[in-house]
Length: 286
Image (cartoon, rainbow, N blue to C red):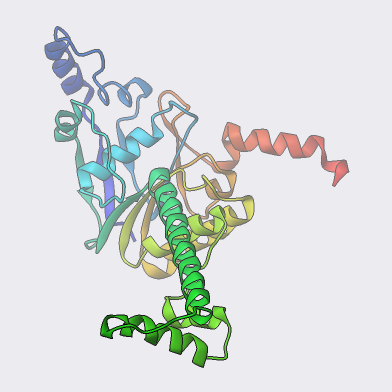
């Protein structure tokens, strides 16, 4: 599905006019002005799967975030706008394609890391509650309790209940707290985040989703994204330099390391060629 057909970044002429006006001020940065135009990146024509490739500083994350903000995409983590972001977005234009997306969302590394930290904190909180229940059970079962007044009735109930049950302390804990949230590795948690957020009929912008994912998980994510496009009518726009994700079937890849930016096959990209050459040199060791 192609909900978004084309995106046009701020025209060079408008950028120059704005910068000539604002340069005499005290600002020392005009981000995102000048970032994409310096690489000859003026517009994107989208496929159901579109990839922005490039090294650090190439502008791929900048382009992805500009598109997301212009479309009003949902995001879980706050995005730090610069002073001139609003002016730049006002100069951008886009063309809609088929139908209307039910959801537009950007997923960044910060979102995934926050999710993993929150999951870890939740489990730590449950572990502490479990320890409290063990202590409570032990103290109640073996307490030498004497009831002095009606105010002691609740405490007496705990003692009687603990002594009446022949089960273990672990059974008491299970009966008195929610089940523990299953703990996953960082890679498993990151993968679960993508499968939870990506739903049917949506536009999803992914910023370097390979972070925290092993090669096996990256391959699994690639399959999940292909199925989301093919069967669940999603449109994926992704910034990555992972060969596992660059190899996605039918993806249009923009090479931001080229000036001007050019469309490439994944097998032509320098990062992929470097991996290929490395494994060729060590072929006899496998």
